[in-house]
Length: 268
Image: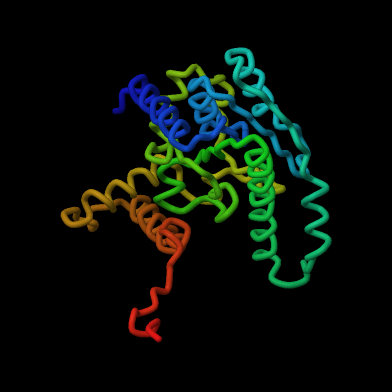
């Protein structure tokens, strides 16, 4: 088990060194009301550098009270935190009406539109980042970013830095407890907020984060020695789900492939 207090101190130190080296003025981060963005925004605020938190609702039927509560919580603790809320519904609807073709490939269309919401939010974050010379801070955890690729390419995956990407969801929960993040956020069901039916992350992944952490550990650390035949039925299903998602989303995890032209073909 990690030492949450020391990890927090390490991340804050890392953030301070990075922003100083980058010659940026501050940080900007999108708030979702989830535990990952709440912990990350708290760590960023603790650097004492200017921190802009941004709420970006898109056609949300119910107000995201958790993100609002966390924004108030942060501002009550840190003078360096500034908060903005920008409703991006009209921008999204304009795009939707421009490309609308729901008569074909409905499931793929819904996924494309969900990813579009994430990409519109990324554009908004970088707009304010450019104006203020801020760094866009990512909120993805280790399982999402390097295990199953559970993020939108050039959406929530489009960031400048990843402070918590080497921490699992279980480890982030320990940090949240140490940081005294609002209890309602610590207990909330993880969701990306991109779907009209408000399906949870674990509904989409068909496994809990704890199960996926187990599968990632087995795959990375013990794959040469572990006897997979002793797995129970649920463990086999989780392992297969992890491997399928890892392979399917590898294009998100690895750097963009470059076609390297042989030197001889470049010679005049």
